[in-house]
Length: 102
Image (cartoon, rainbow, N blue to C red; front, top):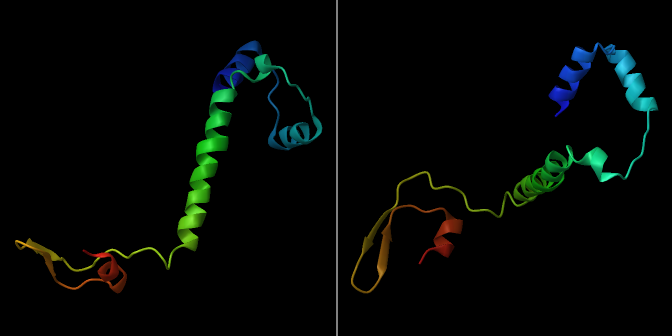
């Protein structure tokens, strides 16, 4: 969508702004519109960004804050064999994992 706008502008012969001119233009031009026709090309990516990307970043924050509470991956292989009445696990386990095993 932005690439097609740029290509259309280049094809029309529109003057391209240099970086500092572009920053000035962005900081001073404010056109507020609530017309959906103006936003129809932006709705898909903005909805995805402001929903999926934000939820993913929040999930990253939560997973980092729960770092000490999440079980660690086992570094040694664990051998499990099925006996007639119970499940016997042989091998070393992380203490957190041992509490949650059957």
